[in-house]
Length: 77
Image (cartoon, rainbow, N blue to C red; front, side, top):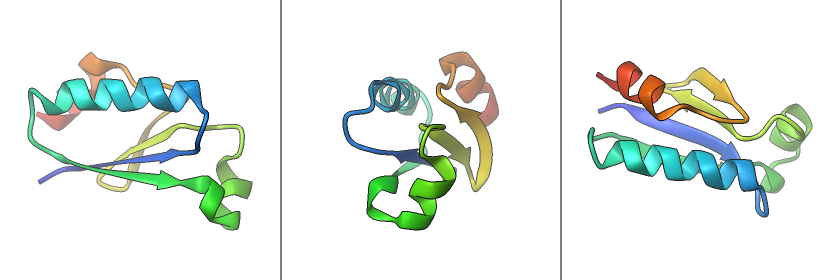
C-alpha cells in the first residue's frame, strides 16, 4: 500500500489545503497517510521552515507548497 507523508505545521493554510486534496484522493484510491509536524523536530523545522507542506509518496518528494489532485491520483495508480 502506498504511503503519503505530509510535512506540515500548525496554522499553515497551504498545509490544510494539501491535506484536503490528499483526503479527496483517499476516497478514490486506498493509501496510508502520515502527517509529520515539523515544529516538533528542530532538524525538520530548519530544513522545511518556509517550504511546507512537503508531500512525499513512498519517501519520494512529489510536491512542495501544494499538490494537484489529478497528479496525485495519476501517481497512485
